[in-house]
Length: 274
Image (cartoon, rainbow, N blue to C red; front, side, top):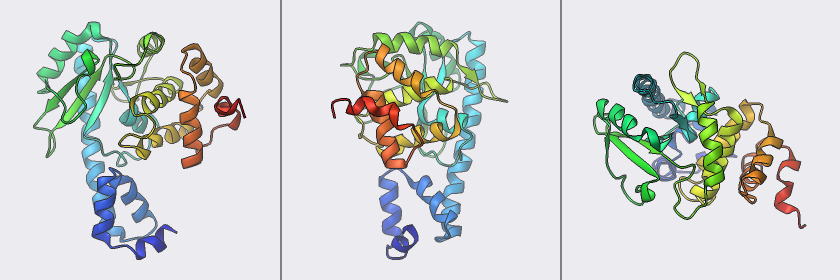
């Protein structure tokens, strides 16, 4: 189906479309794998691979320096954390930023560390902002063609309306129990916790569909396919944290959209009245 559609579509139009949808490296990977203008799309994808390896090396140095500043709470979260912890294709990542989760009591040490690496606090463009002190954004204008952002987030989700006391308590504990990726200094949440907070991020941070939309669900799919997730524990946490059906709904949507291998009984809570 993809090959037939590709043959009928003008390539510049297609490239514009997937660029605007923020999925270019994902689509490029598929195209060269199935033999659609293989050399062209492989070159596009290789550019992201090179960039993302540099991002990983930069983060390794960031975490090394954070250790020297005595920072104990900082963990890499969300998209790039999933790419690295699942050993997924490192080229399949196109964000202009990465997110770190941390305890706000370490704010001064984190700021000093990032400043020493030419990351300086400033407002992100458009509507990202600092959400009433829930996060800080640091920008290094010398990295890559357009610079690069590191977002340091003090709350589980950067949404002012959300009651986060229970999420916050869980995340604070899980950050201290985070694992260090092999042969690096980079810390990420353990698998169950990463799945839980990625799901919460999509549900409460992006209202299920806000940009980058479908791309967010790839985190759920990657984790589910690469790791031994304790699904019952995920749903127990959802109940303990009074999360309603936020988490189970994300799992259901991922299973329907991407055929993510999640046991059907896990999201039965979504349909308990049916």
